[in-house]
Image 1 (tube, one colour):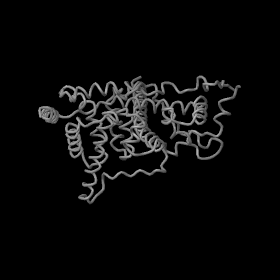
Image 2: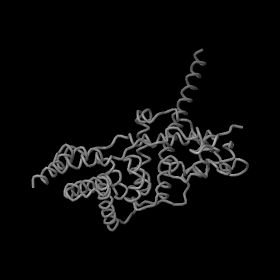
Image 3: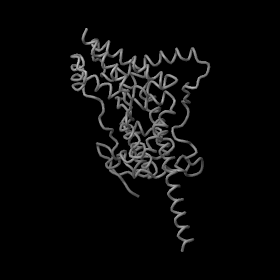
Image 4: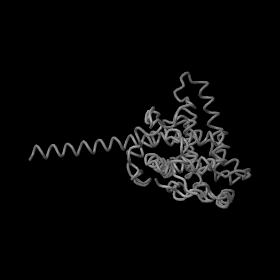
Amino acid sequence: MSTVAITTTGFRGLTPPSVDAPRRTPTPQADQALLSRLCAGEEGAFDELVNKHHGALIRLAMGYVADREVAEEVVQDTWMAVIESLSRFEGRSSLRTWIFGILIHKAKDRGIREKRHTTFSSFESCEDDNEEAVDPSRFHQSGESAGHWAIPPQPWDDQTPEKLLASRQTINAMNGAIESLPRTLKEVLILRDVEGVDIKEACALLNITETNLYVRLHRARERVRAAVEALMGKDQILTASSRCKKSCLRQTQG
Amino acid sequence: MNLSPDSVSNGLTCRAIAPQWSAYLDDALPALMKLRMACHFSTCPDCRRYVRQITMVRDALHMLTKCEPSPVQRRFLRERFAARHAR
């Protein structure tokens, strides 16, 4: 049986590889530099800001309102509020967090107004807090192996993020999975993984605890992972089926 | 002191720890739990694969192409920004 040495710094060699997310939170210095350019009226700085956050703002807004068109309006209102209040920004949070805070406030307001006038609730978020992140049927239910993988993750981890994103189908599968997330999962995934917002800032923005944030974040990541897995599984079946067809054809021709 | 990873992660199942890998990856778990999960990770190839895939999804999400405003929207916002600063 293999053994591991416990040292004062913990277990050696047991940390999962490449676990650290790249640092995406802008440094206070970078934020300050951008803010100075914005306050000086530099249009290029404003373009930079819009390019950086517009997409995530749209996705986030779509969690609160019924359709893309309304989400676009909410985001435009957000940018207008940013333009008007930039001179009053006090730097108590990062510029990004401040902008996302404005968006969430406006999108919630708009969502509430829409619901008053809508008889159906097609865009209502329903998330069962007791739902398991990973489909329970993928684990052994009884016996010695109870709780361990019965249907383990299908192998596609020879990929890299870059390879994954080189495939249009994979991008569509990931986007589709994100769009179909309930709002509570979508907002956490967009803030944390798409935008790279710091955990404490994300908790403050969404008014949730760190524990709650991680529960939601993992559920959201798992749904995107499952969508990629389903696609890869289909590809593997198609590849196997085409190999089989070619082999049958060779046999017939031979 | 030498201990087997199995003895440290004793009692943990793949199902029980699956929802906690995101917190683990951010180093947001209590030290003992982190240690037990690390030990389980070292002995469970299926969980290693699962964590690699979750990590890959996390990194790919940040690289997804972001949608940009339309040229009309962009011009509108630029003009409003310029007008605000001309005041």
